[in-house]
Length: 397
Ligand SMILES: Cc1cc2nc3c(=O)[nH]c(=O)nc-3n(C[C@H](O)[C@H](O)[C@H](O)COP(=O)(O)O)c2cc1C
Image 1: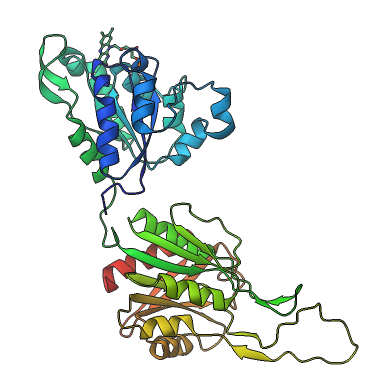
Image 2: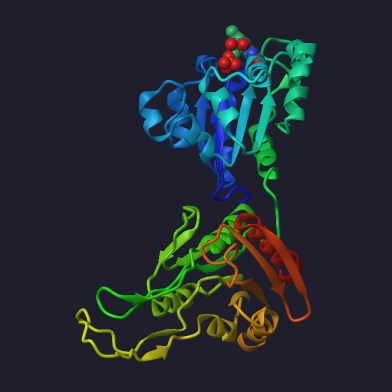
């Protein structure tokens, strides 16, 4: 997998003579697998056309904070949220000063203030401008705000001077951007995660299910995406948002979930069974709505196939993690599950507590393997998910 696969990069092009290199920067980012959207400042538009950048990036160029159409779908906040990283290349002395002073008087500076992703700048200007105290002071402000600065190259300049201030080669800029993203043991790995509750029909209007929301599984998926994995989600009934960078497969019943997992399990490196799969289904689902009769009624249940067990039996079994939702004899039950299913780890979840587990935003779990037990203290599901994936990377991959 390429180092920027599925990464979303906003390239901001400001008013430097080196802006003519911007289309090449777009191409080099795309070569590494990134999707690129361009912001063009007013200064930048004096040196390079919107048309070239639009054609190369295959996306509309954003050049106006006051664009009514853009505000409907992709305003400055949307663009800030969309980006995994913002690259300003070339970064003019003026743009650097505006960002350092916290201005928000154009699209680029507003996006910068509204973003929380990594920001990387490639200053490009005349060597005297680059060595000026004002520019150095502004760069040190940006450095203290954890922004990354790519040092310009030394050499011949458009104005005839020789010195430091040339924009580095686009391929080197693209490489620097890719270095912002962690190369983890999950980079390029394929991960399949089941999430949410399955639904077992009783009749056309009633069903058996459980309280699983899918929040824990999505927290795991989001971290896997962040760590560069190629993630497939098989989801049942959920009350959380999916990540559009996963391959998302919708199912309803345990039987459908079983089929979807088995269809997609080949070549997976990791399988995480986080869904709350109904252990039983109704033997004879009624075609018509069952009517009240006044007397007791009995539903005959039959066991569903065991997804986790059957994945663990596969010849080319991926690293497999199960979840054990328990209300009593927590550790004993979870350890039994670890052994009986044959998986590599079990995440023990106490679902008797109202403050964690099912449908809660927080969780507290124990990561159990055959020889280790690691407690992950109560925290948001996002943070607990991150810890689980870090332990997976360190202990099992
Ligand atoms: C021909 C010409 C070349 C310029 N080259 C640069 C440059 O390489 N770097 C720079 O910081 N400013 C350069 N400037 C000045 C900027 O274009 C100017 O400060 C502009 O306001 C920057 O706008 P922006 O920061 O909004 O993009 C140049 C100006 C002109 C007229």
